[in-house]
Image (cartoon, rainbow, N blue to C red; front, top):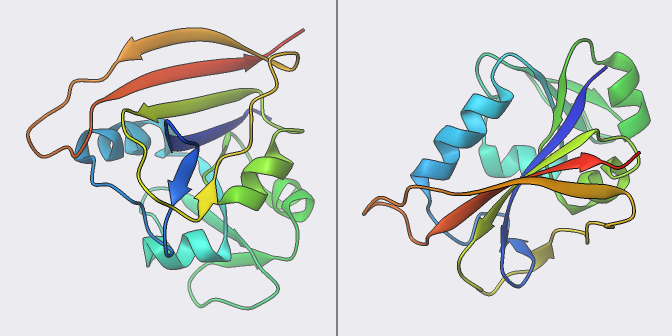
Length: 157
């Protein structure tokens, strides 16, 4: 099973603030949609609450001890991975990303050219475990709060 992680990360490591993204970058949301459509997406409860609904054209699994109408829920990331079929995208938050480092084959990072305040950060990528294989500038539009760069990391070895 192919497992990717997808995240937008500011220069200071921030990925969230008060249960939301600390920026608006519609161009990155299009990139996120392209990377995750047709896959099983696995996220934590707070990320699901931030999104506000199941993501269309994707199987949604939420890691939580609660029941949420309209989505599959499981108590742990290993349980979510066992339930998933086909390609999987881990889409947040911090705990899912931190534990996902042991499972992911590829990490897709949008490096946000800013350092906004936030309360949630992306875990460090260990260069002994992952190698940067692609880096390309994103095309910023007037609707995007910041410029950004797309990075692709692949598991080493």
